[in-house]
Each structure stands twice: as structure tokens, then as C-alpha cells.
Image (cartoon, rainbow, N blue to C red):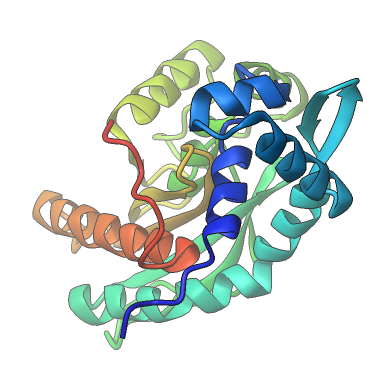
Length: 260
């Protein structure tokens, strides 16, 4: 049976997707030009979206997005809701690699564990849900810092005191900035015994379709086991898990992200 798709709802979301950072304001004329609607229909859609709080009039005939979506986004990205989506995929990561895995969000200046899976090995590394970790010396934290806007990253470096936990801990701001730029370019971060001696980790982001990071995923374990081969394998498995989580968040029939 063909799916029962409501064309008006689809069209409403096509209108909402026209708003962007580069184009925060839209008029009926913009919608007519972009989507091929007639002027009366475009006006009716905008007035309906205004009625439900999805758009707000900025001037006569000119609209911006309403904060309805900020409220809905907060509900979607609640730590417990996000963790419920992530946990099954995190379990599969550990099942495949037999190493611990975790997921984090960024709160204040720290990363916070919202989900984790533990390996069955006699010697394994564990971390608890709710644990808070420094950003500058962990794989998750460096990944989050790499995704921050420049101004927020500068504020972080101005406010946070950086302690050298091990001989591998980077505390020099220019060196850290260079590493964060490299992480942003390659799309993953590594912790090579920077927070704890003998612990290595690799982490990847879970992002929105627009590229905003909403969670981090990592595999970590004792450095003698986490050699380059394991790190490479873990990176592949984590990327697959991140893709599955993103698909789950958006739904299987959602419009795919643009190719990088």
C-alpha cells in the first residue's frame, strides 16, 4: 500500500527549510520564486505557520523562524532521550570490538557521559553515566572543542585552567588549537594517554544534517590493546554507528544530507 503522505505538511516543511543562517528572513515572494507556489497559497502557508508559532512576523509580509523549534529541539536532545537512541548502537560497537564504548554531550566546559557499554574482558576500562571529563585532554572533549564556533573556543581557552595530567597532555594553546583544526578537518579525535597513562581512545561525532555536533561516540581501552590496527577498526565501527544514530534521529525516509 502506498504511504499516506499529506502534501500540505510536506510543503510546509519545504518552506521552513528555506530559512538559513544566510537567509534568516523570508517573504511570500521568496516562496513563490523558490517553490513555484502562487502568491495566495504562499501567503496562506505563512499565516498558518505563524498561527502555530513556527514563524514570526519581523515586518509586514516578512517572517523569521519562531522559537517553537528551539523548544522542540530541547525535547529531542534531552540527554535521556538521546541516550535511548544511542545505547543499542553503543552495545553493538562493544560487541564487535570487545572494548568499552561511551557517548557524551558537552555541558559547560566539560564532557558528560550519557551512555556507555562495557567489554567482557577481565581487564577493561569503565566509566559511569554522569561522569564529567575535561575537554582539552580527552578524545571526546577535543572533538567537541573542534566543533565549537571560533568565539566559543576562544572563550573556553580563556576560562579553563589546563593541568598536565601525563607527559602526553597538551596544555599549550597554540598546539591545542592546531590539533583542534586537524580534528575538524579529518572528522575524528584521538586520546593517546593524555588524561590517564595507559588509556587510548578514538572518538567520532554524531551530527545533525547541517553539521552541528549533538553527541560524541568513542571506543577506549588499555593502550597495549588499542594499537593502530584496533584504532583503525574502531574508527570504522564508530562511523557506522554514528550514521545509524543519525538515521534513527531523522527517520529512514528523511532527506539525506548533502555530500561533503
